Image (cartoon, rainbow, N blue to C red; front, side, top):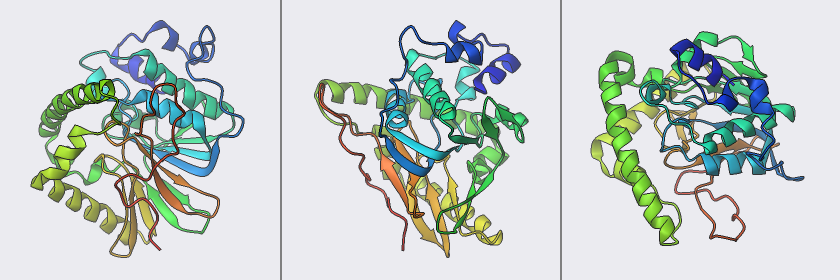
Length: 304
């Protein structure tokens, strides 16, 4: 996908199997992602953001599993799919990250419309906004009309982050600090797996316990909702802050589809227009089937 264009621009060398799209499609020695089930759960629309491929914190295996078990008519990739900030300094691309790319390609081959809205960590792809590459539409923002007629603005949301907009150096410092927190999160995750415990995010827990973090989330949500209100739209779907939520703010439907670093969540829309956040973080015990997706500890269903 667009990872190839980014690597050429930065002068980085991708692993051999990712040097061309055709090479990625010919990975048949060992399927990266099993063939899609005959009857995966089908949605009208799926929204995914903040995957951060290229970092150790990316939960690539659960995401590949989610994409394998869920199909849709339209797939929105709402920014920070690839973490260019990290890859610029250190290359990290395990086989599990190939699985995610291959899963995206399978959905494209199946006829899914894929719309990519780049974020700040994959901002290099904003250069290609207005184009279609390998079946992926790339755009700065989009308007999605739900089955019941709601008009939703789809964008990553980093333009509403004052640190990103006015103090980029501070944003980079914050990204480095966040990376340390994610390292601790991975250690915690591995220990819990060894003990047979389900997934739990240390970084998300700490974020919700810090007063300044809560205030930041609140300011971000209100700023996004205010902008949507001025445009005369019904709601917004965004990412960026790694905090899944569905809520009404000032008469506007605010939705954050979460992330695949801490919460492992996606927003889905069914045929009637109902919107719901699915949590794919629950890990089954070895040898057992994955349980049905849960709604998690978020306002998961569209308000009436």
